[in-house]
Length: 213
Image 1 (tube, rainbow, N blue to C red):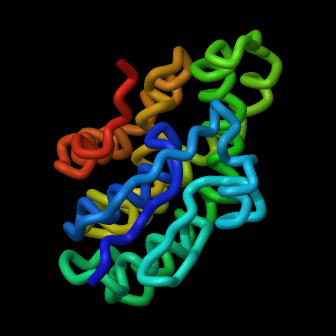
Image 2: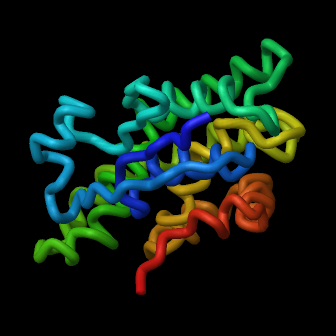
């Protein structure tokens, strides 16, 4: 089987999610850098892979794909190894629910409104906008509260085993905890803190951690 290709930057949470899925299987892949900070995702070469200009894009044996949710489900179904989707229909539904919450609510509040302002705006010569951060805080608090509630006492987001939902959230919390807001946001959620420690200890987390130096 030909080695699949992930197109994107290691600093992207969504790219890291796909890389973690491969690491959890485990299965081999190639990462082709598409620098978002340099604007490579808006260039014709990448737009041919993904006309929306986002990362990651993906290719495997002549099959092209974009959108993280589609990519990680494909990876889980096509590559042998550890199953990352629960067999139980209710746990599988919970996994998909958490992924949807992140895509439609969590990413915007936690990454675009808090993390980008705190960590990445300065890298492109901008100034942190505290009003944008304040705007994201209520939804960020709601998302974290819901993630913990939906766990229902389980160690992971969709049950007793790691699923694609955990790989979706882990890279986001990784960046969130590097901001001044991250610690206080996570502090009320003891179960989510235990989840974070468990995820941080997994080999897939170490293998895919962005290198800032």
